[in-house]
Image 1 (cartoon, one colour):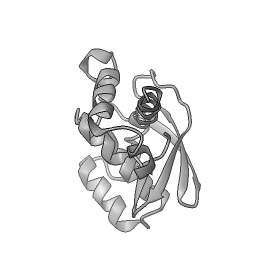
Image 2 (spheres, helix red, strand yellow):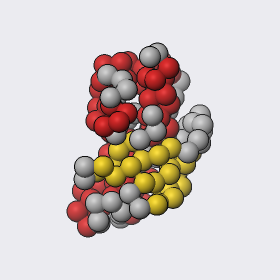
Image 3 (cartoon, one colour):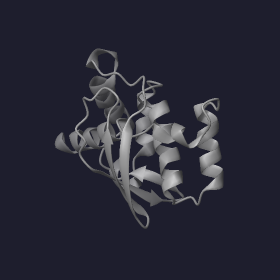
Image 4 (spheres, helix red, strand yellow):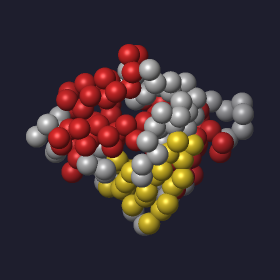
Length: 149
């Protein structure tokens, strides 16, 4: 059972590096929270624009906001069944918290390949310490969820 949460950490870790480049979709004076809500409200819920908005929200909430507990909310139902909120939060904090040596102050870049309600995200982290391994996000229950468990 120990290896399953480790897989979840890797999946969330990849998402941490792929989640903030939605800012290019707005004017320089628009705050990031505005760009996310505009993107979500003007795009089809399962579109790439909506996925980018979800990634941006994840990035602001988890690695930049240090809300490790919220990482669980971005997991697919299938992945949530393979770990607990507390276990995932602990592993994410250890991997990406203040003692990790990671820098999430800037935006990552990513390449998204859409295939219906599934997307593959390859990311390059701001601090160049990410793995750039592909991760799967799936549109489930009206929102994009990390489904890489």
